[in-house]
Image 1 (tube, rainbow, N blue to C red):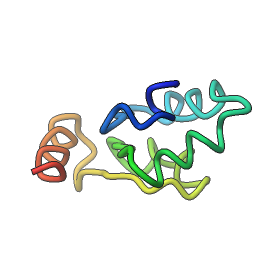
Image 2: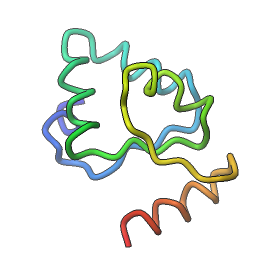
Image 3: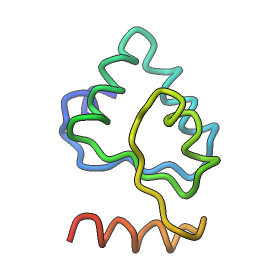
Image 4: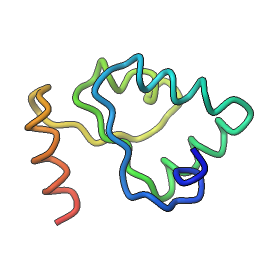
Length: 82
């Protein structure tokens, strides 16, 4: 959490909605800082719209592949950071 909030990572990948929801819950009082980091410098990459739902509910922009597959997510990130 500290590294995400500090912008020390480029991307956080999510492969399930519960994982995204848990990160937001685990942030506790730092949730606003976490959301800000995703808005400003850290990419939230989700395998699909269902996975992204907890993040998009808070206005967090996400990167998602056209097909909800892990391999497609990796290719999408390769293109994003090219």
